[in-house]
Length: 303
Length: 88
Image (cartoon, rainbow over all chains, first blue to last red; front, side):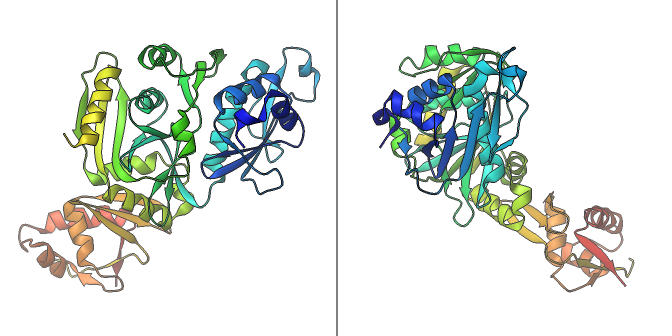
């Protein structure tokens, strides 16, 4: 069963009761929340995702609710709890849905011991993965959202999962987080993209989420073999430029963008090493999204 | 050239990536990108075997007269990263 088949009433009942068991790529998240905006956003943005068996195993237990204090009434707030433990400072109540997304990102970054987890976007074409590791503000999510609507399959905009034995790449294919100007940029560049209503005044500015394309969700279990590792950088006015990077420096930059490299020890080292050995590494600077899309098409076509 | 003997730190993990080499130190949890010269020096040091500086210089193709300062510099940076240790 998919979220779209569940219907609004059952979805709200699940969230407010024992929890919605949501399958995203290799993970099952148990999500509990009585907050109406969370239910509405899940219904719209996770429409194509599978609902898992509510008696089964889950990887993450997430709860969003108001604090049990006077702040329920005065400037209400929302808490994110993972395994019944609050892991962030409370946010304004209207930011409940972005907080769920940030919380799920936190769970993957901190609670996945059996894969190398990279802070990166990733897409797939012809079975090969394009990995875009970058710190916030580099334009990786904007690039990822645009490519996901121009011939590439979305794997993730935030958390790349690398198999420790094979270095095959996968991702949860969850909604893509867009901030500030990139919301308008994606609306213009991808008219078929479904975006949530922007939420203003978050810690990251205005935030909206893009529903992942249906095909990406349906193929969420398919891994990709390593192809390209590209370090993107958005610079206003910069020409589009793809410049090869040596494998060694690519490796060092890649592990700087890994969440759990240190915790994995030698297993993380060899997994990242295999990934780099099988990939071509580049630096990429851009300011124009249309040119960036063309550049990645050429890369995929071997031109 | 000095007869000081050097040995690779036990348990290092090493991978060659193109022309470069990366080394993981499990004890310290650190990862290092080596220059080609430092990588060649590390290659000369098999685990558990100490080599003196003259033998290392020969391994790297350095002359005894001119190569001493260069070899010292590489040994010093590898030692400060705890990738090699001096052996009595």
